[in-house]
Length: 158
Image (cartoon, rainbow, N blue to C red; front, side, top):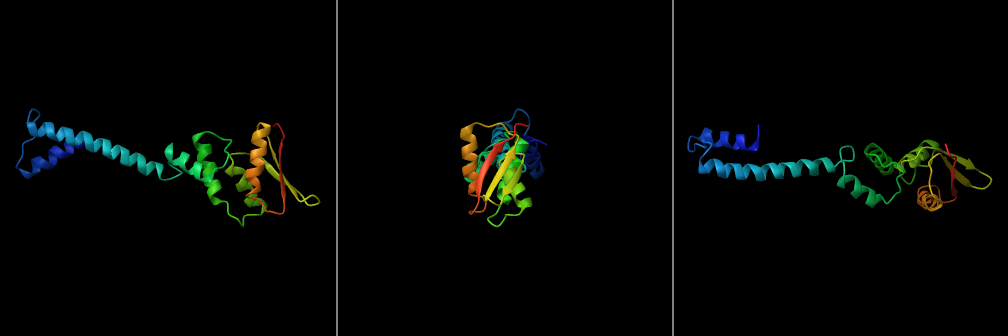
C-alpha cells in the first residue's frame, strides 16, 4: 500500500472526509504522501547504512575513514569483510589465529611467517601492490602487531 492509499484510507474511515480523485483533499494528501515517501526512503537508507553488514555507501566510507586502514579488496563484500575484521582486532590479539584477522582487515590474503632470530614477522601475500603501498601497509600493520617485532611485507606474486 502506498502512502497516498494509506492516508486516503485513514481519512475515509473517519467519515469526515471523502478524498475522491478530483478533490482538493486528495491533492493535499498526494502532496503529503510524496513528502512521506521521500522521508521514509531516506530513513530506510539511514538504517541500512548504520550497520556494516547492510551498508552500501556512506556507512562503509565513514567507518573506513575512522579506521584509516588500507583495503585491497574494493568490492562491496570485500569492504564489509575487511571492516568487520578490522573492528574485531584488539591490542591483545597476538596468536596466529588473531594475526589472520589482521590480514583480513586489510582485504588481503596471505600468511604471516615469524623469524625469531630477527624478531621479524613477514606477511607473504600474492596481492600486487606498489612499493609505496607496501611501505604504507608495513607502517599500518606495525601499529597492530607486537611492538617488539619488525614487520615486512613480501609480495609472492601468486
